[in-house]
Length: 436
Picture 1 (cartoon, rainbow, N blue to C red):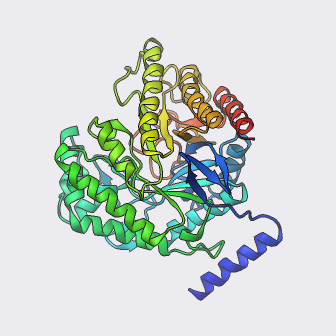
Picture 2 (picture 1 turned 120 degrees about the horizontal axis):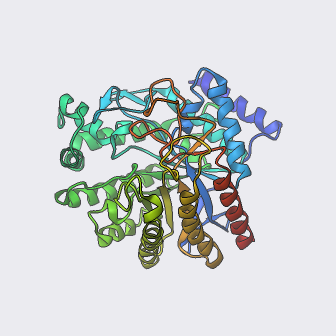
Picture 3 (picture 1 turned 90 degrees about the vertical axis):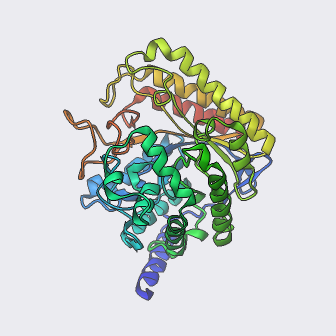
């Protein structure tokens, strides 16, 4: 332990001496918007869920070198906020798909320090570029283990059920058990304890003292899944948020909610869980395809409805966020390419129009100091590319914006999607001007 801390201190002093390390200020919430060092902070961000895993790749070209180049690219386009997975739970198939690997918690209570050291590298490089991270701590969905894995470890979901491809109703029934499974929730907290106690090998800081982290997010898209689970769901959110604040009073805390879509179609429930004093800001996600706003071959025909629904969904929740006096982040949204093609660089005219709707709401927020305080589009694939003739991710492939259970390239924005980056850069400049 002394050796690791000594090495971390050495690296910190060395990077400081050469001007390579920048100290971020903590992001705070004031008057319905985010602030940094007392100044309004409205951000364009992306989902970079695999960012902490890149430094672990043996080939630097696909690992640290790729990460550094992609961070430089994002910063040059005005993207300064990344939503990142801390680590996955368990190994093997889950709900019929391969989950993210390598794994933070390989088996119950057995953690891999290496995973957090990969996250250390990401956070250190982000700090050099004055970027901020939102770190989500687990997952409602199968692709990183999450709640189903905790249920399996504690005998509430058997191995056969966890590994098979479940129906939607089966998945809802199984996952909803998490909120009443005391040992499952305790295991979740133990993983939090392990994360919060970690000391960066590069800066010598614990995560609780690292201002590069903007916020802790309870999980990716936690849902009650069944109406009967709502009381336990609410209790879990409140208790976990209180627990995080007791361990780490410096950072913001948010839930990771999709909005009414993830709260049994109840705006009242969404408002209630975000009104808890330990929850610092609200979130929504928007998934036109998953929510049935169009069919795969009809994006063009359905585009007016998609854009209208998107604007209405944001404004519905923005009004609710104003009522509870907290910022709103549109932290997931995406759309396939025009021809439902996965190939990088192919047309994204319809996706760009969706992005523009969300960017317009953010720019209005920046101009008026409104509650719409940030966005994280889904998701950044950088220099990765889909493998021709292969639809889904396999172990050893480059990570891209789409997780393993989805078609690789489905919603991913690559570095050669020129029209999308031109749009993002345009709005980044406009937002900066509005804040100056």
